[in-house]
Every structure is written in C-alpha cells, then in structure tokens.
Length: 177
Image 1: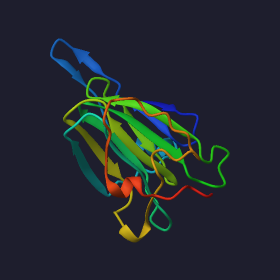
Image 2 (image 1 turned 120 degrees about the vertical axis):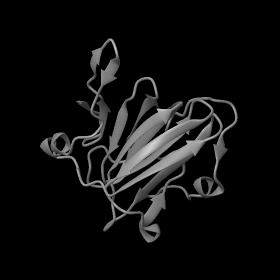
Image 3 (image 1 turned 30 degrees about the horizontal axis):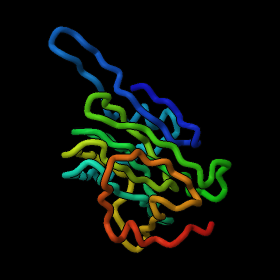
Image 4 (image 1 turned 60 degrees about the horizontal axis):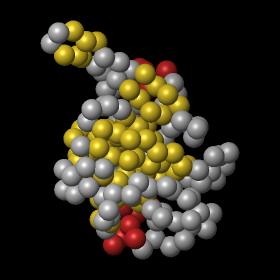
C-alpha cells in the first residue's frame, strides 16, 4: 500500500499497490502492521456501507467526540465521490483546515481520516457506494457535525447540479470554535 500524508497531520490518501499480470491484479486494501508502523489507528471494530442513488448527494460533515472519537478508512467501491475531511482538533496547527480527494471505483484510493476530524462526501455519479471501516462503535450521544457550507471552513464543493442533503446536515449552527 502506498501512503501519502495530506497537508493535515495524520490524514492520509492510501493507494493499493497492484501486483498485476494478464489475469488482472491483486492488491491489499488493509494491513494492520502497515497502519501501526505509521502510528495510525489499526483497531477496526465496525464496517458500514453508504449507497447513494443520485449524483449530488452530500453526506456530512460528521464526527464523534471523546471518549468515542473514531478513525475512518473510506473507499468508494462503486461510482465516484468528492471526499472531504476537516481537522477539528483545537490544538492542531491545521485546526479548521480541510482537504478533499476524489475517490472512485477506478482509482481505488482510500482516505484515512484520523480521530478528531469531521468527514463527509458528495457523490459525483449516480449509484455511488462508499465502504467505511471505523475504529470505534457508533455512539449517538457523542455524534457531532458541522454544516457542509459553513464559512468557518470554506469548503469548495464541486458543482453537480441539484444537491441532495438531509435536513439534519443542513441545520447545524455556525461553527464557533
């Protein structure tokens, strides 16, 4: 696996290292030792799927607070998404900064989102599916979010026509932090 750290400390884009021949290729998408070696959370306790019918579906920006902060490993297994992470760690030099990466079924990239980051995505194609691996169980009482278009972050989302967003994701108050 090829790990590339983003401008946000601890957040990575991971590409499978392909072993190819005339049949196709083989590649690892997870290795506990590789994650541990880089100081990344290698404790995975839950996996989830997000299937999205329409291009322009926006989910996020979600995170969990202590004591249930979670790291996520995210991959688009069908279609394409614009994946966004925000550093929500007040002590971090990149606090409130964001980074985005396009994850597609073709490029097979993954995003590693560390504890203390908000995460969300917007679909770039109809029928996009996203596979999550998480280091912590879901605890609704620790769940938090920030608004996808909050000026405190200034995220530049792709124009895809109509956006489909849940009422919950639209109603977060302005971030004060």
